[in-house]
Image (tube, rainbow, N blue to C red; front, side, top):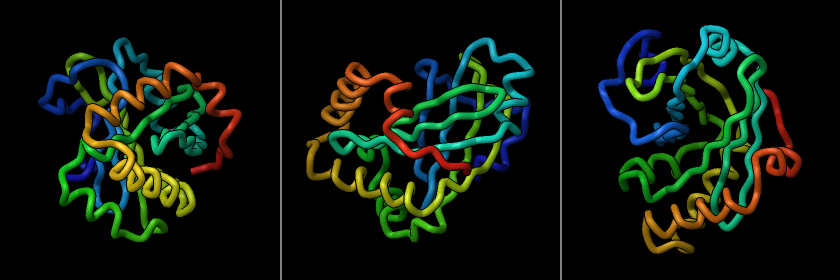
Amino acid sequence: MSALDLKVGQSLGIRPAGEGPAPVLAGGGFEVFFFYEDISDAEARGFAAGALSCGVYVEDAVPVLVIDIEGFGGLEVAFNIYAEPEDKRRTFFESNPAMGIAHLVLCDFPDATVRAVRAIRPGPMLMAEIKKACLDQLSLYRDIGHCFRAMTRLYETIGPEDMRERVLMRPA
């Protein structure tokens, strides 16, 4: 099932660990589930239909997808390749970056009810940057925990606005 098959009002049937993004590899692209408490109807509409731009910030082999959505705000999503099973990693790495598509799903927290779903095309350059950084993670970090600690250090040293100043944001 693709994230695009999800319907607004549908429960994901899971209990997320906390608020924030949860990226998942899906073929040559990815899906990101965003879990937030107290989402207004206006924010959900903005998320679903607002003009969107994105870029990628990479430091120490940690790619962070930086997203701005008009009518919603800014989002940052770090990828940890170790969070994915081997077969999903292989499919992701072997696919053509030009074919990569991303599905973004906005959900309530903590009940994980879908509020908005949209598809974007980040573009081949951005997809290639994410793939390269994820591939580099496999040689730089020994396991999922090691990579998550690097992600935590990254978020402690650079804020979202600084990331935005260092990346080229493009419409997607």
